[in-house]
Length: 289
Image (cartoon, rainbow, N blue to C red; front, side, top):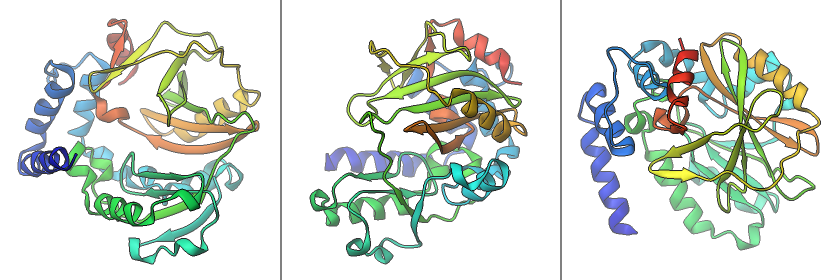
C-alpha cells in the first residue's frame, strides 16, 4: 500500500509540470483506453475535457468549495436544505475530537472524495484520521484533475452532522442538469459498502444505463428503489440551483423524506466516465453545449 501511494504521488508530481492539454490526453487514455477529440468533441466525456481548457470554470470556485457553497444554497433555496454545520477548521491541528459528537462527517473543502464518515467515535482511529486529513490538505486537487474550478480554493475542513435515514440506507440522488433543466437522475445506494446505482428519467422510469469509471463497471442494483416522496421538491430545487449553468450535477439526500443538499459538480468523475450502451455517450454529448 505504501509503495502504491508513493508511485501515485510521483506520478502526479510529474504530471504537475506538464501542460493541461497533455495531462488531459494522458489521463483520458489511462482511464478509457482511447483519446479525446478536443477539436470537434461530440461525446459527453470529450466535451468535459474541453471544459477543463475553458477559463470560465475558474470562476466557479465558490460553487464547488464545500464550505463556500453553503452561502449560495442558503440564498438560492434556503438554509433549511443544508446539513447542520458543526465546526470549520483551517488546520487538522485545530480539531478537538473530544468535543465532537459520537457521529459526524469530516470533509476537506477543496476537492472530491476527501471524506471521513464516523458512525462511532469510539471506533475511530484518531491518529490515522489526522494523518489522512493532513495528506488531503496538502494535495492540490486542481493539479491532479486539471479542473479549473478547484484552482483557487483555500483548503479547510468542515465537520457536518451525520446523516441517518430511518431505513438505514442513505441514498444519493444526483440530478444531471442542462441549462437549468434536470434530464436524468443517478441514484446511488450502498455507497460505503459496494457501490451500486440505477439511472432514472424524470418520471422515475428506470433507464437501461450503466456507468464505467476507472475501468470499473458499476452494477445496477436489483433492489427496488421507490420514488422518493419529496421527488417533486428535489426537481424544483435542482432547477433553481442549476439555472445559471450550461451543465451541473446537483446532488441531494433524502433523509426521512427531508431534502438535504449534497454538492454541485461541474465535471463528474473528471469527465472520464463511459456510459453503456455506448450510444449514450453521444446522446448526452448533444445535450451539453
